[in-house]
Amino acid sequence: MAMAQWFLLLCIFFISASASNVQTKVTDNPADELVAVLNSNRTGNKLSSLYSNPGLACLALQYIKAYQGECSAVGGPDAKKPAESEFAETFAPNCDVKASSLAQITGRFLACQSKYAEPSEAFNDILIRNSKSLDILNSKNHTEVGTAVSGSDGGGPYFWCVLFSNGKPKSSFVTEGGEPKVTRPGCFSGANDQCNGANTLSRIIHLWPIALGSFVALLYAL
Image 1 (cartoon, rainbow, N blue to C red):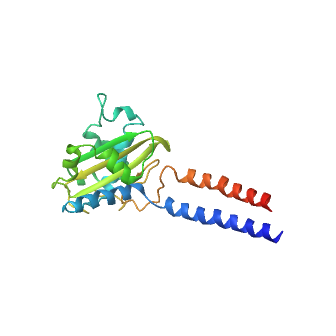
Image 2: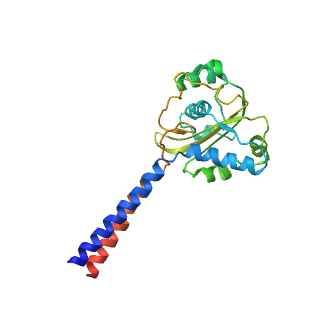
Image 3: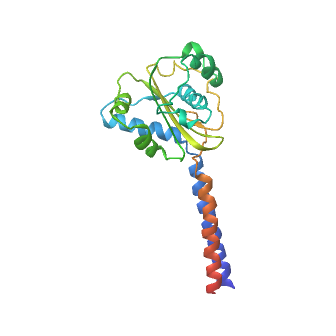
């Protein structure tokens, strides 16, 4: 009986430790990770890293929301994009960004697919597809960047958006209250916001059958 109690405690410890590890992952922001991958690629090519502007990043999330979950409208013959006027008329007010502080958008990436991808995978396999993408990434006109990642109503399809600007860091895309308005669903870079990836919950759900199965097997062994 003492042996069974010992194994029970071991299983509880396994679940607790795994849940703790998942909680650590929950606090990660995939949009921030995307900025890190992007800047690492630029500095690897001897280019300057870009300032992560949260106001610009919030606009990137609003840019995604303008598609209303229509993945088919991104790329291909039916590709669409929001009107430039929406930046000042809709996106900026939704983010509490002062319209007078908007700077030029010098480049953008937008992609969508049904499955969630980790930031490094999204960068290498989804956003950077050809030489034109590389030219945008490595442009010397950029000074700042904002990224956003979002699913539709918390699920797929999943959108990734990167906006580049030549604005002056900390004086462009300035927000009314000091920080851009956080909205859900979706994550944007520089928000100081806890924002989890798509499969975090599924990871912890899948831990329970493993732990329970191990415990049952041990009971039979006893």
